[in-house]
Image: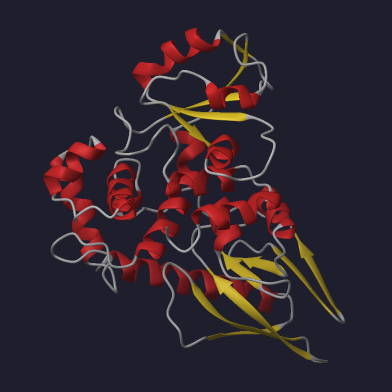
Length: 336
């Protein structure tokens, strides 16, 4: 069964489980799909009837919930999120990002309407097993998908599998699995010449996958600096060529008007010691300088010292600061 069918089945199952928990509370709960298909999630209408009054809410259902999806999935102050599990931290993020509420497959819910107040928290996910991720969005596949996106963003010709292996550092086997998965999507992401067909959809999925894995796979280290006393000093710093500015510093370098509260550097493993020496860095639990392991050994072509836009979009989302949303949209929106 193609991976897209597995994803659809996972969303269908969680909708059923979430509705089952709501029905167990004495509510009549129904889901009606909207006709327009979406990538990686479903939109619809959630209907709730307590026997006295009936209410309808616009709703979004997704199997995987991350910092990126909380911000990027379409919603307004009335939209209800249905997903597998909402942690207390994610519940706070949903509130900050202006969602109307949520209901999950584990029995947690937060719903508000005239005459309706429902707040159930603390129920754990029924399964601790990680949901398998399609090849383009695994730890091994993300660098390959990133190479596809950055080549498209530069306007380069489509890269061959060998070119993608060189650009990403991945094996040919990994590249072939990623390419095949992107071609077999419904509708396809790549054509037979590796031309990217849906850049915005792929960018959004890449950002969601990277933000979900970052803390585990590419964790930050925090430092104070004897060379760069303020984060903005790094804008003029002499850094190794493979080390790229990320997050707020990258946004400022690209023209955003803001005062960086911290500095994020994407640093290849082999350059970490050099960056520490140049900055006279000292470990500090709340230090303003963060070093994040890069997933490249040589910088993406034409990076010019700044994280490419898909990675910058992920950086800004990981700050989890709604004040950065407009800057992110201005710099990284529309699949650029």
